[in-house]
Image (cartoon, rainbow, N blue to C red):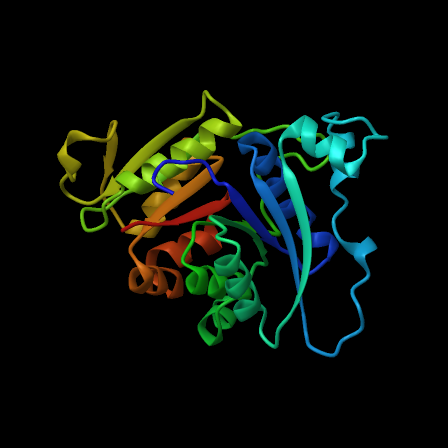
Amino acid sequence: MNGDTPKSIVHPTDLSFASQDAFAHALRIAVACKSMLHILHIEAPETEEDDWDRFPQVREMLARWKMISPTATRAEAAEQLGVKIVKASVESESPVVGVAAYVERHLCDLLVMMTRPRSALERLLASSVAEETARETHVPALFLREDQKGFVDRETGAVSLNTVLMPVEATVSPLDAFRHVAAVAHCLNPAADVMMLHVGDDLPLFEGLLPHIELRRGPVVETILAYAQEIKADMIAMPTRGRKGLLEALRGSTTQRVLHEAPCPLLASPVK
């Protein structure tokens, strides 16, 4: 995206109540950035036709947030808010393949997904569908865990995104990720602060193109998590390398461990 706000957001959903928080975040970001929002359900071939009433109710939520009139039509809501909503159901044997194909076909540039807490053994045996989807699509992905509080109030639409933590390292250029993260954060809250952290002995310079980078020493994951708690981060943004780097990062080590233990949502942002 190179600093642009997302134009086409995909929220894959299993139509469960637990996914409502992720839906609220996807919808609120779409409204703030005036993006197209795709609410996507993947179903196995030869299953019964989807009950479209089970899809998240967009106008009902927007009316509850007092952004539109309860009697507004779909066209009126779209015109008033500058947001287009698409509800889609796609047949695929694999949710990961189905979402990836949809993302590629519709040139989507942000995923918003719910992921459930998993034990260390579960993570060792298999990755979650959300993580596999992020690896396969190679687009920025916002993860929300079921057991953590996000930065969008599902009932009111209020945004509490004040502080974003972005860890950086010398081997991954963070400039594109920083512009992307700042664009999304400032779309939701123009006063949001993006704070950077490097865990190591010396600060990477990045040609002086970034604001202040906090330097801390210690175990990488534990130090990131501790600093997130210290600054009361509302979101953690992790720049990741290209396709190979994102695969490695989400399969183990830093990004995956931070994702599983973070006190707030995590945005994984691939960089060149």
